[in-house]
Amino acid sequence: MELGLKGRIAVITGGSKGIGKAIAKGLAAEGVNVVLLARGKELLDKAVDEIKSQNKVQVLAIPTDITSTASLKAAADVTAKEFGTVHIMVNNAGGPIRRMDRQINWPDTDWMDDVSLKTMGMLRTIQAFLPHIDKKGSGRIINISGASASLVWSPALTHGINNSAMNHVTGYLAADLAAENITVNAVVPGLVGTEAREVWAENMGKQQNKTKAEFLTDYCKKMGILSGRWASMEEVADTVVFLASDRARYYTGAKIAIDGGISLNAR
Image (cartoon, rainbow, N blue to C red):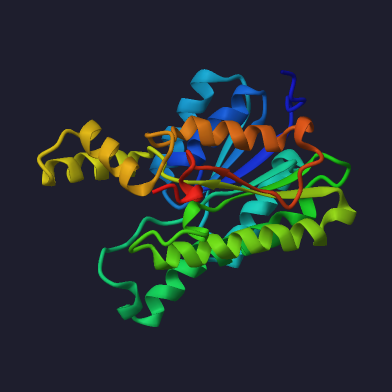
């Protein structure tokens, strides 16, 4: 399928690993030049080398702290100087569950730190890059939220707050930016086999005297994941690539679940 993406420019936050890197690789495979934003230079450099080894596209890595408006403004300036127009903005950055204790007992500074990273980070990023996003019909903002936006997924209280907020902002900005020919959509993953989740599944299996595969089979059944497995990072990336394309030009304000049926609460 011709997606019409070759030569376009995409900016991906949290682009140095996990779902963000998978999205960057998926877009690069379609001929998109990518800009990776993340805090750690070492992982960014590794991601650049990996993407360049597989695709003949331009890859720019900019160490960026999305909790800082100044850091994002500087990243947007560098991107504009290098490429001019940005066609695709993917807001993917977010942190893992920081610890397993009851989040209602956390100090409010911990709640705010999580919200500042994902929800406020998304808003800061959009604000910084909006002047450079294409307004001729190929401008795309794609937010990566998560199934905890609508499910109680213990102990992920702040994850649920962030993902709910991202879904709301998606609809709000779809209306706000419609006159500028920019579409805004959310991809809503469930359980995804990221590097961190691979370690988690391995450790949980050991704790329960199971193999990783046995633990995941039982966990997916317990959680009501109809597909019986987690999503690969590439499957999430494929959804983003489609939404970034000309084929998805009529999608805006959508919240597209890629969760294997967990949102049906089949359990």
